[in-house]
Image (cartoon, rainbow, N blue to C red; front, side, top):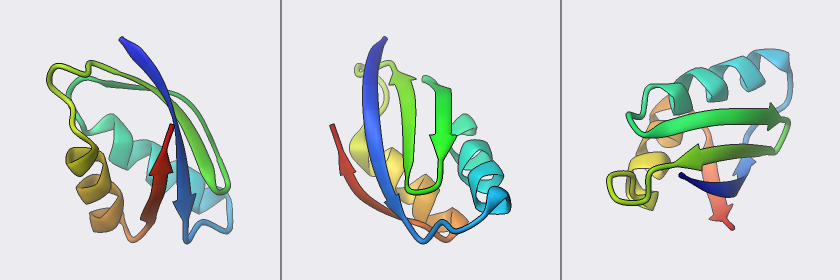
Amino acid sequence: MEQRQLTISGMGCKHCIDHVKNALNQIEGVIVENVEIGKATIHLDATTVTEQMIREALTNAGYILEGIQ
């Protein structure tokens, strides 16, 4: 498992935090460590999880993935 920091736009409240957490938890191979307004820390299985999978999950939830570190 590799740790990644996500920068996410479109978040503004606790509801957004919960919504992002739920979206990320739906991705098999992702473990959510922390979500705050504008960012998230996750652990992922880099052999099965792609940036595109994360981007799509967040887009479908109504948010924009600005970057992954």
